[in-house]
Length: 110
Image (cartoon, rainbow, N blue to C red; front, side, top):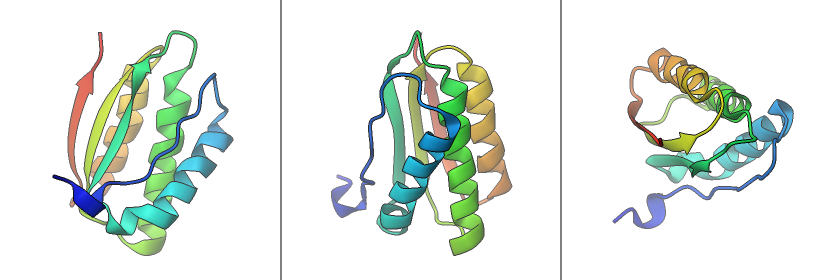
């Protein structure tokens, strides 16, 4: 269904620091976002990872990418769980709101 429009992603375990997650997201966005129409941010419920750092880093990398290359119509699917999930979702929401062409759908794991 998505064909060649799906983004290539990375999986980082443990409790990665903000800087590492932002760099991983920046690299993925630089190489793949132009041809993508969906960004999946998925994973299991993380009991030991402060998910706000991951989501904030990805949101900042996305915001910077759009600032440098212009916004791209994009569906963002979020399926995560863990400490500070709501705060992390707020960081993504703020990025979505700053670009009116983004479309989003969020789901929260219990």
